[in-house]
Length: 224
Image (cartoon, rainbow, N blue to C red; front, side, top):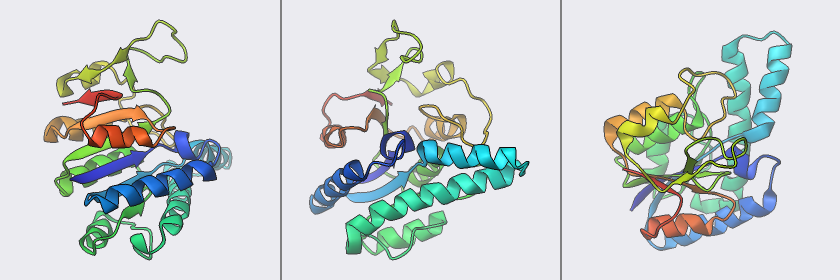
């Protein structure tokens, strides 16, 4: 299978978690050994938002606020890539074309953000579309997609299955802003609705959950 895996910064970088990064390296090595083609997009988490806030307080324009967040995502991606060693390409891809070239070399693609105005969710969705992936997996800090924020509403219920046309009813942020933080951003949602890409949102604190999703087991929220 050709897989695009989006690892949330909320999982591996809030705070930075070397142990979990190591576990993801082991997971990706296992998936690669089973013959899967892998593209991994990593977020920047609290670290990225910290730098975005600093940029705001320095009165830097939104484009530069985005750029500093992108630098952080690439740094987190670099740590994972270096742990994987020769299984990845020498440099962190900075364009979709770079990612394609890396994948064609039979390497695991590990990358962060691409350009201002585009979240790592959108990067993952665009890559899934461009590469005609079989599945997009989003590893986040929740068990899946809920009817409302479970941290604020104890009565929130996990949605095990969602149709693409129902996504807009759940996600509230309609426009991009630097450091945006929610399960899936609006632009990524638009791409998924257009491509009908099978997407699984699951708890990323246990990397083995991704194995379950790949095997077709019931885990998290399935969007299709």
